[in-house]
Length: 252
Image (cartoon, rainbow, N blue to C red; front, side, top):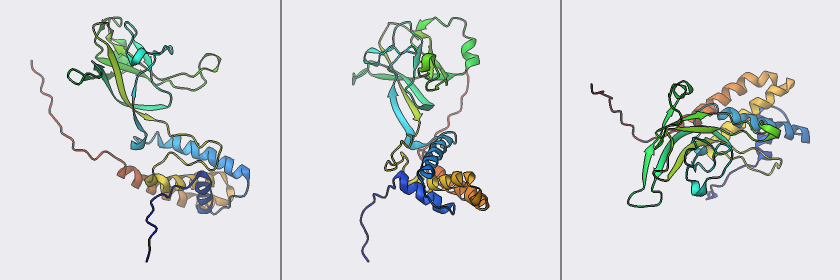
């Protein structure tokens, strides 16, 4: 028996919504049904970003602007400027390094920057001390349209010590970014890998059923099915690299 030989199944939002309605025992009939389902899809992907690290949303970036929006020349930190903003859509910060001699194959070096909490940052006696930055404090304050006159408010990092001018520094970070919205076109596709599409459809079916009294009898079944399918996908979507633990033995 012949097989297709293709591996391109990627349903658009219209197909995802229709499948979800059918699983909820309902029928997609109107533009309102599609609109409310798109809204539920956006809430669903935001929920996923609170459940942990989604590997497909990890992205490498360089810091490219100070906290006030001043762009950095070639992404180099500004002398005596401690605070910088992260790119819009940053959900979580995974790692951050300070780079010197960028682009030099012989001397380029990355130094791990240590993340500290607000209480730890607050106890630093001289926050204006300048040298090579060693650590940073992250303020998770991104709210789009929340600033003055509706301006966007970004997550910011504050370095200590404050960058000096002994050398040029760049900061590279690995972040978990937001999943793209559905948009207004039912022909769009979701920014979700194929292995998570079953969980996406199951989750949407549950959210739709929550809105429709006639689907109340299916709520428990849909919720259980959604959690099982999402858990299976999430447990597969994880780092599989070797881990080495080294004991810390202080010297007195």
